[in-house]
Image 1 (cartoon, one colour):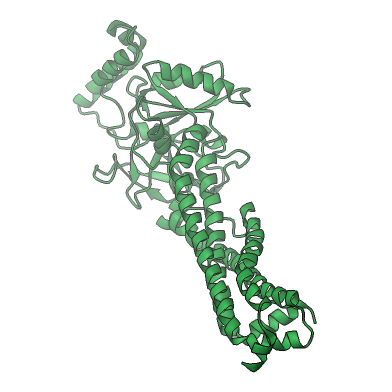
Image 2 (cartoon, rainbow, N blue to C red):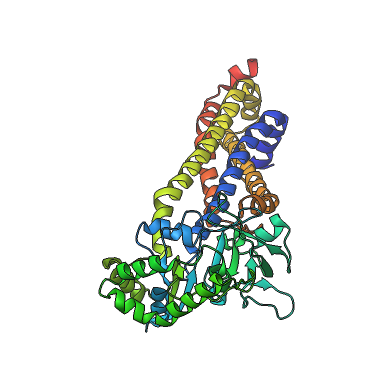
Length: 454
């Protein structure tokens, strides 16, 4: 009979105490596993979402606010830029794609953020090598004025399907509800990114809504501030055709020539605005051009640029990283307390086992053998707790991932794991050795005669 068989029989004799102490270890390990896996998903979402874009260009202000509002839709937009500035980016020699984004409105039902954009938005994967997948019916695509594409969470929570219609609330929940209705033409497959809880509408429809076109005088003043080298005459000359159309439309309305809400006149480029521009660059595998453009834009007075991975990397280190470390320290303390519980259980049992140890010694067992049996008990308790904890932790992730996706929008692979889990085994072996040393020494020094008389 080997040492582990003897140790296992000894644990079975004290099955209640052994089970409870091992369970305490397993709960600590399970909590650690769950935290590691969920943290890995959160880290991936924040560090990789938006990494498909070289830079994000927006109005001057906080770079963090620009990224949080544009990529994650978790903050208010800073301000808007002239449409002309977006078109300049489209013509830039280094730019592969420049995609406009307009933010601010929400859905009437559910309060989900609205993004006014173009079909090109869905050609840029938000995470490299993870392109958008979309459910559509027939040849309907995101190409017409009143078309919309919705994220998976929006579809599930609002019960929307292809063909559903919805209205928008202007500038948040306190604004008025637009009369116009958009029609769902596509539903995105789950991505594990903020796109899952976003509604995308065609930018032409976004501009056609009341209040989404800049008043002419304000638009001219904005152009003068944005391009200080140009005069009012230069601006009016550039937009002469637009200004003529605006005057003609104003005269038509004054004469009583109305129009229904799905037959709006085209909004002039002068009156158009864009909240941010998503930019991807040509031949910039190492990000050198992105850094150069970012520095150039930020030195000017017109706008600001930010690289999503750079901004979110700092945020993860300074904020989320500290939270993660706090949770890991907490679980480490739980495992440490569990280890102390195992030590107390084994050490207290030594007083009741003096006769058992003395009999083993009398039958020929050496002191070292008795000590190794106690160490084996400690190792079995710790490793049993570790194995059960690993299984329990992955079980929590497996059964909890659909609930987390539904409640928090985090897309967790039920079969995912974190490489840091493998450190649990050597930690448990080291802890079992430390736990078993003192009880083992107590068994080692047990007096045979005294033990037989007890």
